[in-house]
Length: 287
Ligand code: AMP
Image 1 (cartoon, rainbow, N blue to C red):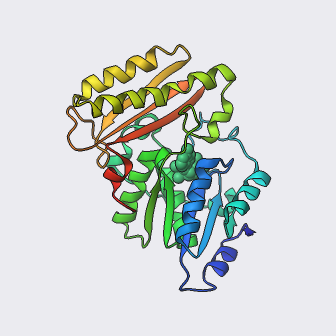
Image 2 (cartoon, rainbow, N blue to C red; image 1 turned 45 degrees about the vertical axis):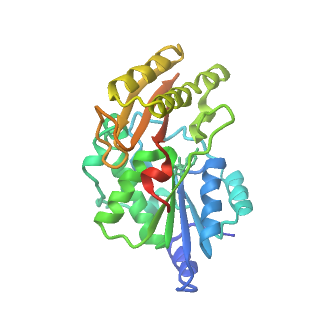
């Protein structure tokens, strides 16, 4: 496994064999089984796998956790090596945002809602860094987690609108045994908060149960899921949504598919989670 810090080193390895296929897994590090599941899928589907580790400052608002975001490069590299990555790109801020940097990628409508409403500058940072990583690595396929569902909608839109030549693969959310979605930010939780954090997946599962039983009212789904969050004293709801998984428009009435999603503060830690209905495959099709 080659660990490199320069764009030239990435390109040299990437183009050693121009006909080889490459899978790209972009991450912010502090890796867990969710990230590693993406690396494994990339490993299974490509000749070579590149992972990137970069805590991208432009996707954090000034009030957010950029400086405290957890980091452990040594452990990350060991996990990537074990999962079969061939190349790890670990750029620094001076390389990604050199003096004079002033070009950004923006996607309009699907970034205005949900995470974008709560974090107005977030997606511009995400699309800009992901477009840069796509240009640097030029992968055959790029792997993203369902955990950040809106991010997959936004990046899918960017790929289509800007004619980016790669296939995007969305991999299912990896969870703890009690349902909590794995996240690097779970490390911020105290033991009582960690217990309370199961409230997100409990509320979402209840929503799926209602949908499977025939409930179609967006309002009813909203109320029922909100009641579960409100009953948890350590949790504070940021937003809760019953939306169409492609447009992210709120649904008064669910028809063939829905995305149940939410952001919840547990203490100071902001957690997100989602569950698509009837399934991830139904919503996105086979990769
Ligand atoms: P991050 O390091 O948080 O930027 O995440 C890097 C990639 O890993 C993103 O595509 C995430 O959606 C994905 N990811 C994060 N958590 C999970 C999880 N629990 N299951 C599956 N993928 C995940």
